[in-house]
Amino acid sequence: MTAMIEAKGVHKLFGELHVLKGIDFTVERGEVAVLLGPSGSGKSTLIRCINELEQISAGRMYVDGELMGLREKNGRLHRLSDKEIAHQRSRVGMVFQRFNLFPHMTALANVMEAPRQVLRMSKGEAERDAREQLERVGLADRADHYPSQLSGGQQQRVAIARALAMKPELMLFDEPTSALDPELVGEVLTVMQDLAASGMTMVVVTHEVGFAREVADQVVFMDDGVIVESGPPAAVIDNPQNPRTKDFFAKVL
Image 1 (tube, rainbow, N blue to C red):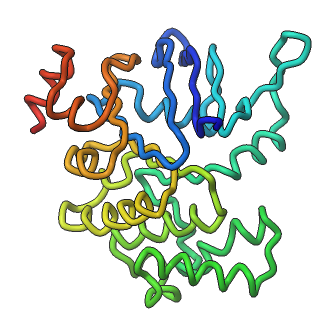
Image 2: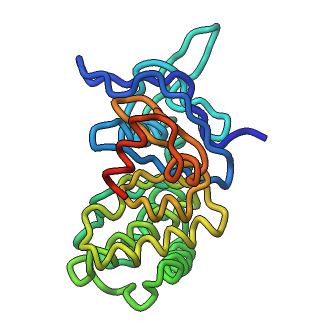
């Protein structure tokens, strides 16, 4: 069976800055992979490369066996059109650190917007589905509230519902709790745990080591643009082999 994500020799440069230095990384279908490591290690850049929010500089990125952003023809790689890339990206849900909700729309309207515009769903179908997704994240009673009337944790749960409304095969989370007050972190992590338990393939960039230990199938420790160590949480977090990994967890645990 094809892996959900396969990165092969992925490099990313921003001008002179070499952010990813030959990443090889595989996530199987239904697996939860958590990326840990110090700030600036390349974690967020890696997941932005998975769904083409960043264009890789070298190597190949596959999602569900499909080469992302590129087409191979006669042994040469050609960049896909913006429309083709948008189509590829529509299969991947992404939740950011900042919630990016439309402030002038209710929670319900925020969740309905992309299915109506991108999937061309009827208003009735989009509304039914949006209410289901809001219920899934525990916000059925907040459907008619505007973002300004919601806590940060509730806004982030609306953002998760909005991503789920597009029926993604894969969910990416880029530090989804780092902008939240500490007492609101748990409600977002609970939704993510439920999502993982439902079999959703997920890649999560986070500093929440407890979440990684509890939910991850695979923990990937990154530093300075490379994967230093990866494996099950019990191996990487509780019994790291690399001195850099040992040093990191000695400081954060």
